Image (cartoon, rainbow, N blue to C red):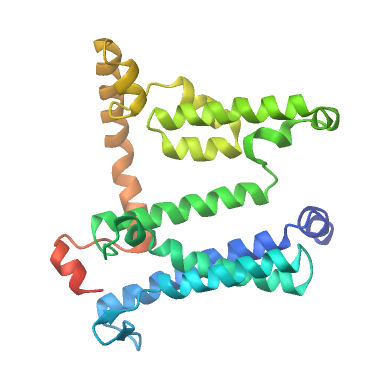
Length: 254
């Protein structure tokens, strides 16, 4: 275990990334526990307010993210300073991303349906950082051998090709696949060759005069959403708490 830790974490300089990811996940989990207790009116926790202004935790999150980011740039990749900066950055990022939906909508949608976006983004972020931690490099650069890495043309063509696949997947309305495809090119290839979602820019541009392709895309999207929407929502509710059915009530409880 000690050899694996030294060889795969310490020597490649991935310890700050691991600490940042751990701080990010733990902060999100603790924050959700506290907000759910506040929502239920249990425990000593209360919303922080100054006068009529509700101080959201995204505010200290931004401050910590800025401090941790600048300290990480100044402190290098090794040593106690870089580790501390990574933890500070991870804590700040966890607080910020927990209120991603609020930033996106510029409104307090924490316990509404729109607030699910925060949980989804946090899970995606943790998964992507986890892939980086496991050794995956963006755009498949890690698949190149030493000789190919020395050839700029090979590197640039690999990056350009994988970026194009991810871009096609994104244009087809498959944002999650496109994001993971940046790290694992095969996933982007899978998204690029599959049918586009009917409301995507790709479908609107290329399926406009292809009624069969448009109908097939609508049918596939219907079956996909019917199969996965329920389990996905249950998982999000388990992680972050179920939203209130009444939007007005959701705002009152934050």
